[in-house]
Amino acid sequence: MTELHLWLRHEVRTTERRTPIVPSDARRLVDSGVTVTVEESPQRIHPLQEYEAAGCRVAPAGSWVSAPPAAVVTGLKELPDEPAELTHRHVYFGHAYKGQPGAGDLLRRFAAGGGALFDLEYLVDDSGRRLAAFGFWAGYLGAALAVLQHRGRLAAPLTPTSKDELDAGLRPVAGDEEFTALVIGALGRSGRGARLAFLSAGVEATPWDLAETRDLDRRALLAHDVLVNAVLATTPVPPFLREQDLDAPDRRLRTVCDVTVDVGSPLNVLPVYDRVTEWTDPVRRLRARPPLDLIAIDNLPSLLPRESSADFSSALTPLLPAFGTDGAWGRCLDRFHRAQRELGIKSGGVEG
Ligand SMILES: NC(=O)c1ccc[n+]([C@@H]2O[C@H](COP(=O)([O-])OP(=O)(O)OC[C@H]3O[C@@H](n4cnc5c(N)ncnc54)[C@H](O)[C@@H]3O)[C@@H](O)[C@H]2O)c1
Figure 1 (cartoon, helix red, strand yellow):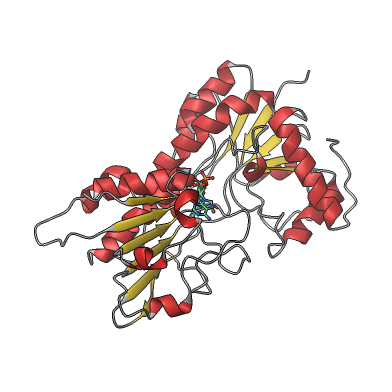
Figure 2 (cartoon, rainbow, N blue to C red; figure 1 turned 45 degrees about the vertical axis):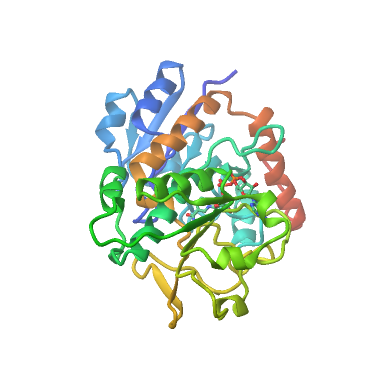
């Protein structure tokens, strides 16, 4: 068996400070015989020196393109547009299997170079459950931003922060009015995070999951002041909110945070808006009187880069020494080949 060489790349997106492998976990990998090369990266939450001290090799930003062919290039978000041919095996979130913009081009780049995508979203156990995910912190942030907005304390633009700083802002202060909150998808990762953030703000949220939405009571939903949607929809269900619900005369609902952000998808349970909101402008007013504000940010965990990286890394690291074509990694590779076949792309390189 050849020794595993992981190559932790720099992220091209300048706001992306997270990393899939934190230095303490990199040390565990090195100690278990894995070679770990870490690229310089000005924005990564952990400085390069921490990885060096953990026994990792270092390399310039973007040098993965000339990494040894057997290196497994590891990251989180999109690759740069060049090179046109991807020759390595890549581990990251490719967002390329649901017809997303650019998906076909990316899969063709892999086919052209003979490389392969091991998409972290599809790294699942044999019952299909995700093995490493950022959901908890997405939910935590989503609820935290909703609380801050509801209390009139959300400052834009949003910038990455720490949990301590965030929690300090969540604590109720004199003059804060009490409010009610509802979390849908409450039993999932994001839902649990959202409920904990509400507790940090002194609010016990109503938890709804599949059982409570099967026969949806929209009046009960609209009777809450704040809603966090954290469902992972896999089949279409009747929407939780429709345009006419926003104009219901007895609506108490004032603040919505859609952690799920399935905007534009047939699975969208909140089809009352048509584009995400951004760090620069996190809140969109959907109704003026009475007000209804929406937060729909699709990269929430990046706002807590240290905590979310540590959490993700602790789930991913134990799986990495077994990297290959079997088990969960084999399922990832099969999914990649299926996506290529679905687009009529002839795949080369790594066999599943
Ligand atoms: N905005 C962001 O930055 C961000 C980051 C990470 C994840 N997400 C998204 O958050 C969502 C939740 O992710 P997760 O990791 O918590 O998933 P999860 O699988 O851990 O939990 C999803 C929960 O939703 C529930 N659910 C599904 N359909 C439902 C319905 N119709 N009614 C009520 N409950 C329902 C499930 O039973 C489950 O408890 C996903 O769509 C994910 O893509 C967003």
